[in-house]
Amino acid sequence: MLNSALNAQPEPLVRQQQRFERLLRWQLQQQEADTPERLYKAICYTALSPGKRIRPLLVYGVGQLLNIPLPILDPIALSLELIHCYSLVHDDLPAMDNDTWRRGQITCHLAFDQATAILVGDTLQSLAFQILCTPNNNLPVHQQSKLVYILSKTIGMQGMAAGQQLDLNFRTCPWSQTDIDRLHQLKTGYLIQISLQMPAIVVNTPSDLESSLCQLGRSIGCFFQLQDDIADYPSQYNEPNYCQLLGIDRSYQQLKEIHTTICEQCKQLKLQPNHLLTMLLGQIGCQIT
Image (cartoon, rainbow, N blue to C red; front, side, top):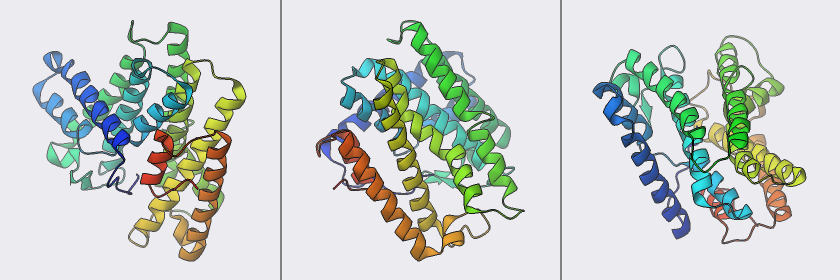
């Protein structure tokens, strides 16, 4: 969960986000005719709620860096956002985090019911893969298979699902910084990392540049999570939280250290102030200096 609001966004970010919102709405409308009405309404309630669209914007930022046409990036951006939305719906369920509020509105299982919310998550996940490997979606077949492999691994037993299980485990047993690092990397970090990696794959980016983008993605994920933990502390006292482990002062210091690392990584990538990635990082509190 990323709590930082994107206020007073630079115009290029606003335009790209608005374009993506139109694309997402259009994509969902293509599914309406064959979807039960209640399920379709719940899907739109969830996926079209006012999110920050961090992951799609990261995709488009890398696309700008690598000169990738937007139509090639669109299936990747859509699939990542739909996976993120699915994860939020399932995380909010009473058996998981039991949340009541998400993106400025009551959670899906309360607005509809738990069974519908489960189906919404299932549908969003399957739609993400459907979009990614649809014929004639501007992605060659061999690249589609690579992207499907990376995304499926990121959200499964070696990724998001494992992270959620660790989150549940650590509420009733002791945990260390190594534990919480692993939890957040699995539950949140990998999806952010592949938001930078997947666009690089479709244009056969050299391995060293792809590796640099992955490293930047890992750093951004760490920054987001630590920032969230600081914002949530001490309200999430019974859940794994860096501030409980490190203390608030040390947490702020570590956030500054990660910020410095991100700035160095951006310099290595030769990101300019007018670049989408630079502007996006600035909006979430990570000004590139």
